[in-house]
Length: 307
Image 1 (cartoon, rainbow, N blue to C red):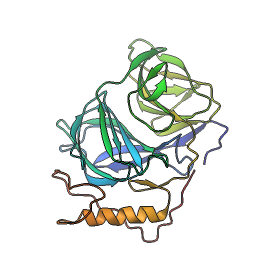
Image 2 (cartoon, rainbow, N blue to C red):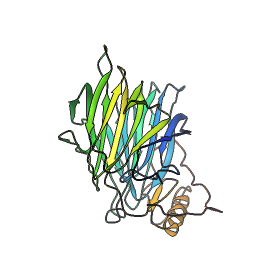
Image 3 (cartoon, helix red, strand yellow):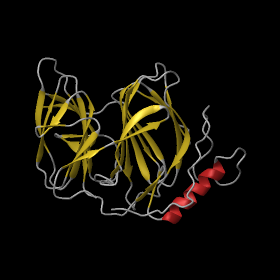
């Protein structure tokens, strides 16, 4: 865990998801979550060869997937029967609850730039019914020299329509001007912890450069943060009330015990087999041309819940 009383610059990790390079900011050894935000991938900007990002059917439990599209288009399909293309400036919010499966496919052209986050559901909601919501418009305002889009929760006097289950905030800041650096001192809730991630261009926070390969963590008690960015730059600010529930994150699952993880894995592996009959935790097979993903082995894995 990070020192709960001081800001920290934490390195992200480079990985690949469906053929797209990503920077994984959360979780990491030093920071497991920010509020209930328990996962943050920055995908792209990338211009892969067609077909671009292709992520076959895979399951989720105990979380919400939150996709903020900046560039490109991605087709979402899920086991509730939803089929939806997400476009720039839109959010897809999928509540897994007890179980759901979905796939993601880049559309033509295959370029992509997005932030994908997961929100750990509190114990009171984590075994509820699955749900999918698409938000084609999010509230916007001006914050200093930035155009601010409120993605989740409440910030800058605006409230996002995205349905979340714990006190959260998420704001996209875009330096739309062309002549000089954009500046703002962004007010923060002192009962929240926050994090800042640069998504594009050159960003500085509290007088220090913030490269895209770093996440800046701001502990509870921080009243505001000073941000400066070159024209055309973009950054993401997330925050939330510290989630005082231990969670266990493995593969695509958020649970509380290793037994829950093992059970969900076994159920998915059985349902992914052709011709599976009987009760299906993750819903009927998706109408997707992509093959289902198989879960990694749990052999030799030690699962520990973290706060």
